[in-house]
Image (cartoon, rainbow, N blue to C red):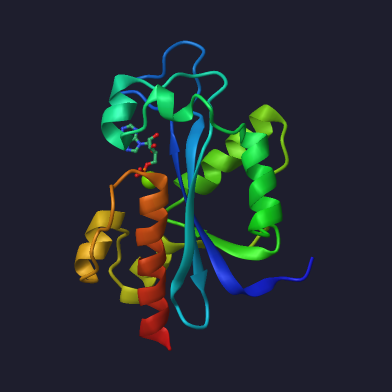
Length: 183
Ligand code: AMP
Ligand code: MG
């Protein structure tokens, strides 16, 4: 498939989580897929969306709601991960665009869950780890969290931290800042 290089799909997922160990039989499952589209030429963020995904095997704990603000009611009518993947592929051309996320977590969660649920992995091979790229660009010798990165770059943390849609929006601003340093 020919690569599309005009835009980057920035993705940030939220997943079911607990304060300590997972309860018996409940794996971490994606509950929100935050998406922000970064225009490569203008470095403007040209779109954002949060897709709510209904977990199949796990429940949203009070701890998870406290962290993410996402409640069981928010995902009650959510998509299945398979349906969300279909939207990524058709609406966002996720197989042929470069995609980006902050760290390894989001990519690995997608890989794990697609294998476990026997569904098609919705992304292509071109992935940017923004956390790693920022540390390398700045020669910091260590990777730092998203909130710290925004602070260092004097960028505002917009929206609610740990909401996928807002995290994706803010990560796209970090990626845009990195490109601006190198153009
Ligand atoms: P984030 O993109 O930083 O909001 O984190 C993505 C997901 O990682 C969250 O939806 C949680 O499932 C998990 N996570 C993040 N921080 C924590 C934490 N302090 N304790 C447990 N799980 C966490
Ligand atoms: Mg997040």
